Image (cartoon, rainbow, N blue to C red; front, side, top):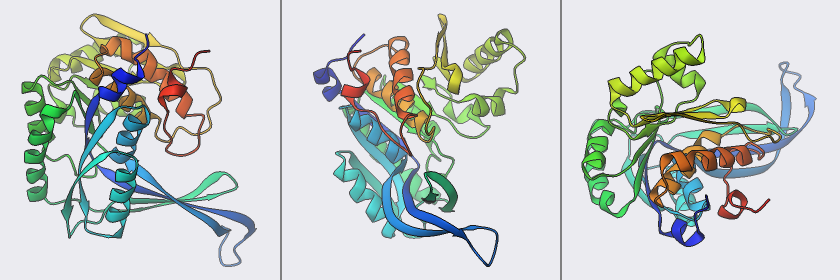
Length: 311
Protein backbone atom coordinates (compact mmCIF):
# COMPACT_ATOMS: atom_id res chain seq x y z
CA UNK A 1 0.00 0.00 0.00
CA UNK A 2 1.03 3.63 -0.51
CA UNK A 3 0.38 6.67 1.63
CA UNK A 4 0.13 9.88 -0.40
CA UNK A 5 2.39 12.82 0.34
CA UNK A 6 -0.70 14.79 1.41
CA UNK A 7 -1.69 12.10 3.94
CA UNK A 8 1.86 11.99 5.25
CA UNK A 9 2.03 15.78 5.55
CA UNK A 10 -1.02 15.75 7.83
CA UNK A 11 0.43 13.05 10.12
CA UNK A 12 1.70 14.43 13.44
CA UNK A 13 3.97 12.44 15.75
CA UNK A 14 4.93 13.45 19.30
CA UNK A 15 8.43 12.11 20.01
CA UNK A 16 9.44 11.94 23.68
CA UNK A 17 12.81 10.72 24.90
CA UNK A 18 16.54 11.06 25.37
CA UNK A 19 18.26 13.34 22.86
CA UNK A 20 21.94 13.66 22.13
CA UNK A 21 24.27 15.59 19.89
CA UNK A 22 26.15 13.31 17.50
CA UNK A 23 29.55 14.79 16.67
CA UNK A 24 31.72 13.33 13.93
CA UNK A 25 35.40 14.20 13.53
CA UNK A 26 36.76 12.99 10.21
CA UNK A 27 40.48 12.77 9.56
CA UNK A 28 43.41 11.29 7.74
CA UNK A 29 45.32 8.38 9.30
CA UNK A 30 48.88 8.36 8.00
CA UNK A 31 50.92 7.04 10.93
CA UNK A 32 50.96 5.33 14.30
CA UNK A 33 51.65 7.42 17.41
CA UNK A 34 55.19 7.14 18.81
CA UNK A 35 53.66 7.41 22.33
CA UNK A 36 51.37 4.37 22.13
CA UNK A 37 50.26 1.78 19.52
CA UNK A 38 47.33 3.90 18.31
CA UNK A 39 46.64 5.70 15.01
CA UNK A 40 47.22 9.44 14.80
CA UNK A 41 44.14 11.07 13.24
CA UNK A 42 44.68 14.46 11.64
CA UNK A 43 41.18 16.01 11.78
CA UNK A 44 40.12 17.54 8.47
CA UNK A 45 36.35 17.92 8.90
CA UNK A 46 33.77 18.16 11.69
CA UNK A 47 30.05 17.42 11.50
CA UNK A 48 27.15 17.59 13.96
CA UNK A 49 23.89 15.67 13.67
CA UNK A 50 20.69 15.05 15.61
CA UNK A 51 21.15 12.02 17.87
CA UNK A 52 18.92 9.78 19.97
CA UNK A 53 15.26 10.86 20.04
CA UNK A 54 16.24 13.91 17.94
CA UNK A 55 17.29 11.54 15.14
CA UNK A 56 14.00 9.68 15.50
CA UNK A 57 12.08 12.97 15.11
CA UNK A 58 14.34 13.86 12.16
CA UNK A 59 13.38 10.57 10.51
CA UNK A 60 9.70 11.47 10.94
CA UNK A 61 10.05 14.88 9.22
CA UNK A 62 12.31 13.50 6.46
CA UNK A 63 9.42 11.22 5.51
CA UNK A 64 7.26 14.34 5.11
CA UNK A 65 5.28 14.03 8.36
CA UNK A 66 5.27 16.51 11.28
CA UNK A 67 7.13 15.93 14.54
CA UNK A 68 7.25 17.59 17.95
CA UNK A 69 10.15 16.68 20.22
CA UNK A 70 9.75 16.75 24.00
CA UNK A 71 12.96 16.23 25.96
CA UNK A 72 15.23 17.33 28.81
CA UNK A 73 18.69 18.80 28.14
CA UNK A 74 21.36 20.81 29.92
CA UNK A 75 21.82 24.55 29.58
CA UNK A 76 25.11 24.17 27.75
CA UNK A 77 26.70 24.73 24.36
CA UNK A 78 25.71 21.25 23.14
CA UNK A 79 22.02 21.76 24.01
CA UNK A 80 21.82 25.07 22.14
CA UNK A 81 23.57 23.57 19.11
CA UNK A 82 21.18 20.63 19.22
CA UNK A 83 18.08 22.83 19.53
CA UNK A 84 19.22 24.90 16.54
CA UNK A 85 19.82 21.70 14.53
CA UNK A 86 16.40 20.35 15.51
CA UNK A 87 14.55 23.58 14.67
CA UNK A 88 16.37 23.86 11.31
CA UNK A 89 14.97 20.49 10.22
CA UNK A 90 11.37 21.59 10.84
CA UNK A 91 10.87 19.65 14.09
CA UNK A 92 9.00 21.57 16.81
CA UNK A 93 11.40 21.53 19.82
CA UNK A 94 10.06 21.49 23.39
CA UNK A 95 13.27 21.42 25.44
CA UNK A 96 13.21 21.43 29.25
CA UNK A 97 16.53 22.76 30.56
CA UNK A 98 18.42 21.72 33.69
CA UNK A 99 21.54 23.78 34.41
CA UNK A 100 23.08 20.84 36.31
CA UNK A 101 22.55 18.43 33.45
CA UNK A 102 25.23 17.73 30.87
CA UNK A 103 23.59 17.32 27.46
CA UNK A 104 24.56 13.93 26.07
CA UNK A 105 27.21 14.19 23.36
CA UNK A 106 28.57 11.22 21.41
CA UNK A 107 31.80 12.10 19.68
CA UNK A 108 32.91 9.67 16.98
CA UNK A 109 36.37 9.85 15.43
CA UNK A 110 36.36 8.54 11.86
CA UNK A 111 39.45 7.64 9.84
CA UNK A 112 39.67 5.73 6.58
CA UNK A 113 35.87 5.43 6.43
CA UNK A 114 35.63 3.60 9.76
CA UNK A 115 34.93 4.54 13.34
CA UNK A 116 38.15 4.48 15.39
CA UNK A 117 36.84 5.78 18.72
CA UNK A 118 33.68 7.03 20.43
CA UNK A 119 33.64 9.38 23.43
CA UNK A 120 30.43 9.84 25.48
CA UNK A 121 29.68 12.86 27.68
CA UNK A 122 26.53 12.56 29.85
CA UNK A 123 24.80 12.52 33.23
CA UNK A 124 21.21 12.05 34.49
CA UNK A 125 18.44 14.70 34.75
CA UNK A 126 16.67 15.62 38.00
CA UNK A 127 13.26 14.21 38.84
CA UNK A 128 11.58 17.61 39.31
CA UNK A 129 12.33 18.70 35.77
CA UNK A 130 11.05 15.39 34.41
CA UNK A 131 7.79 15.91 36.33
CA UNK A 132 7.29 19.30 34.67
CA UNK A 133 7.61 17.58 31.30
CA UNK A 134 4.44 15.58 32.05
CA UNK A 135 2.36 18.80 31.99
CA UNK A 136 3.95 19.78 28.67
CA UNK A 137 3.19 16.28 27.36
CA UNK A 138 -0.49 16.62 28.30
CA UNK A 139 -0.72 19.95 26.46
CA UNK A 140 0.90 18.55 23.30
CA UNK A 141 -0.98 15.25 23.24
CA UNK A 142 -4.31 16.33 21.59
CA UNK A 143 -2.58 17.73 18.47
CA UNK A 144 -0.79 14.49 17.59
CA UNK A 145 -1.90 11.28 15.89
CA UNK A 146 0.70 9.03 17.53
CA UNK A 147 3.15 9.12 20.44
CA UNK A 148 6.65 7.68 20.11
CA UNK A 149 8.82 7.10 23.19
CA UNK A 150 12.50 6.81 22.33
CA UNK A 151 14.28 5.36 25.37
CA UNK A 152 18.06 5.47 25.33
CA UNK A 153 18.39 4.77 29.06
CA UNK A 154 19.73 8.27 29.82
CA UNK A 155 17.06 9.04 32.44
CA UNK A 156 14.85 11.36 30.39
CA UNK A 157 11.80 9.08 30.60
CA UNK A 158 11.45 8.87 34.36
CA UNK A 159 7.68 9.50 34.08
CA UNK A 160 6.95 7.33 31.06
CA UNK A 161 4.37 5.20 32.93
CA UNK A 162 2.25 8.28 33.64
CA UNK A 163 2.65 9.56 30.08
CA UNK A 164 1.60 6.19 28.59
CA UNK A 165 -1.50 6.19 30.82
CA UNK A 166 -2.45 9.68 29.58
CA UNK A 167 -1.84 8.78 25.93
CA UNK A 168 -3.85 5.57 26.34
CA UNK A 169 -6.74 7.49 27.91
CA UNK A 170 -6.66 9.89 24.95
CA UNK A 171 -6.87 6.95 22.53
CA UNK A 172 -3.47 7.62 20.92
CA UNK A 173 -1.30 4.86 19.42
CA UNK A 174 1.81 4.49 21.61
CA UNK A 175 5.08 3.21 20.11
CA UNK A 176 8.10 2.49 22.32
CA UNK A 177 11.73 1.86 21.38
CA UNK A 178 12.72 0.09 24.64
CA UNK A 179 15.92 -0.06 26.65
CA UNK A 180 17.14 -2.12 29.61
CA UNK A 181 15.68 -5.22 31.24
CA UNK A 182 12.62 -3.66 32.98
CA UNK A 183 9.77 -3.46 30.49
CA UNK A 184 7.13 -2.98 33.21
CA UNK A 185 7.43 0.78 32.62
CA UNK A 186 6.08 0.26 29.08
CA UNK A 187 2.88 -1.44 30.28
CA UNK A 188 -0.20 -0.64 28.09
CA UNK A 189 1.84 0.58 25.10
CA UNK A 190 0.46 -0.21 21.63
CA UNK A 191 3.74 -1.67 20.37
CA UNK A 192 7.34 -2.01 21.54
CA UNK A 193 10.17 -2.54 19.03
CA UNK A 194 13.11 -4.40 20.65
CA UNK A 195 15.94 -5.95 18.66
CA UNK A 196 17.07 -9.52 19.39
CA UNK A 197 19.63 -8.63 22.07
CA UNK A 198 17.20 -6.26 23.83
CA UNK A 199 14.39 -8.82 23.88
CA UNK A 200 16.71 -11.57 25.16
CA UNK A 201 17.58 -9.35 28.14
CA UNK A 202 13.91 -9.45 29.14
CA UNK A 203 12.54 -12.88 28.15
CA UNK A 204 15.80 -14.86 28.04
CA UNK A 205 17.19 -16.83 25.09
CA UNK A 206 14.77 -18.87 22.99
CA UNK A 207 15.48 -22.35 21.64
CA UNK A 208 13.09 -22.25 18.66
CA UNK A 209 10.49 -20.08 16.92
CA UNK A 210 7.77 -21.83 18.96
CA UNK A 211 9.62 -21.00 22.17
CA UNK A 212 9.98 -17.37 21.04
CA UNK A 213 6.27 -17.22 20.16
CA UNK A 214 5.29 -18.46 23.62
CA UNK A 215 7.63 -16.12 25.46
CA UNK A 216 6.49 -13.08 23.48
CA UNK A 217 2.82 -14.00 24.03
CA UNK A 218 3.49 -14.18 27.79
CA UNK A 219 5.26 -10.81 27.67
CA UNK A 220 2.37 -9.22 25.74
CA UNK A 221 -0.15 -10.59 28.21
CA UNK A 222 1.90 -9.57 31.26
CA UNK A 223 2.40 -6.00 30.01
CA UNK A 224 -0.98 -5.65 28.25
CA UNK A 225 0.70 -4.71 24.96
CA UNK A 226 -1.19 -4.74 21.67
CA UNK A 227 1.91 -5.91 19.82
CA UNK A 228 5.65 -6.60 19.92
CA UNK A 229 7.76 -5.93 16.81
CA UNK A 230 11.02 -7.86 16.97
CA UNK A 231 13.69 -6.44 14.65
CA UNK A 232 16.07 -9.21 13.57
CA UNK A 233 18.80 -7.56 11.45
CA UNK A 234 19.52 -9.78 8.44
CA UNK A 235 16.46 -11.92 9.28
CA UNK A 236 14.04 -9.03 8.82
CA UNK A 237 11.38 -8.42 11.48
CA UNK A 238 8.42 -10.18 13.09
CA UNK A 239 5.25 -8.57 14.44
CA UNK A 240 3.48 -10.50 17.21
CA UNK A 241 -0.08 -9.31 17.86
CA UNK A 242 -3.55 -10.57 18.82
CA UNK A 243 -4.12 -12.16 15.41
CA UNK A 244 -0.83 -14.07 15.39
CA UNK A 245 2.37 -13.00 13.71
CA UNK A 246 3.60 -11.30 10.57
CA UNK A 247 7.16 -11.88 9.36
CA UNK A 248 8.87 -9.74 6.73
CA UNK A 249 12.27 -10.63 5.31
CA UNK A 250 15.16 -8.18 5.27
CA UNK A 251 15.54 -6.16 2.09
CA UNK A 252 18.44 -7.55 0.05
CA UNK A 253 20.99 -4.75 -0.27
CA UNK A 254 24.51 -3.95 0.85
CA UNK A 255 24.79 -3.21 4.57
CA UNK A 256 27.13 -0.27 5.05
CA UNK A 257 26.23 0.97 8.56
CA UNK A 258 23.47 -0.20 10.94
CA UNK A 259 23.71 2.96 13.12
CA UNK A 260 20.26 4.45 13.62
CA UNK A 261 18.39 1.77 11.64
CA UNK A 262 16.10 1.14 14.65
CA UNK A 263 15.33 4.87 14.77
CA UNK A 264 14.27 4.79 11.12
CA UNK A 265 12.06 1.73 11.59
CA UNK A 266 10.09 3.09 14.56
CA UNK A 267 9.88 6.61 13.08
CA UNK A 268 8.43 5.19 9.86
CA UNK A 269 5.95 3.07 11.82
CA UNK A 270 4.85 6.08 13.89
CA UNK A 271 4.45 8.37 10.86
CA UNK A 272 2.40 5.75 9.00
CA UNK A 273 0.20 4.97 12.01
CA UNK A 274 -0.35 8.70 12.59
CA UNK A 275 -1.38 8.93 8.91
CA UNK A 276 -4.04 6.28 9.53
CA UNK A 277 -2.26 3.08 8.46
CA UNK A 278 -2.75 -0.09 10.48
CA UNK A 279 0.29 -1.50 12.26
CA UNK A 280 0.23 -4.63 10.09
CA UNK A 281 0.24 -2.57 6.89
CA UNK A 282 2.97 -0.28 8.26
CA UNK A 283 5.47 -3.03 9.20
CA UNK A 284 6.57 -4.04 5.64
CA UNK A 285 7.08 -0.35 4.73
CA UNK A 286 9.09 0.28 7.93
CA UNK A 287 11.18 -2.79 7.11
CA UNK A 288 11.88 -1.33 3.67
CA UNK A 289 12.92 1.99 5.27
CA UNK A 290 15.36 0.14 7.54
CA UNK A 291 16.79 -1.64 4.51
CA UNK A 292 17.44 1.67 2.75
CA UNK A 293 19.06 3.38 5.75
CA UNK A 294 21.63 0.64 6.45
CA UNK A 295 23.08 1.40 3.04
CA UNK A 296 24.06 4.88 4.27
CA UNK A 297 26.82 6.00 6.65
CA UNK A 298 26.07 7.16 10.22
CA UNK A 299 22.70 8.09 11.70
CA UNK A 300 20.90 8.58 8.37
CA UNK A 301 17.27 9.07 7.30
CA UNK A 302 14.96 8.06 4.45
CA UNK A 303 12.83 10.43 2.36
CA UNK A 304 9.26 9.87 1.22
CA UNK A 305 10.43 9.60 -2.42
CA UNK A 306 13.10 7.01 -1.56
CA UNK A 307 10.63 4.91 0.38
CA UNK A 308 7.81 4.96 -2.15
CA UNK A 309 9.95 5.04 -5.31
CA UNK A 310 8.51 3.01 -8.16
CA UNK A 311 10.82 0.07 -9.00
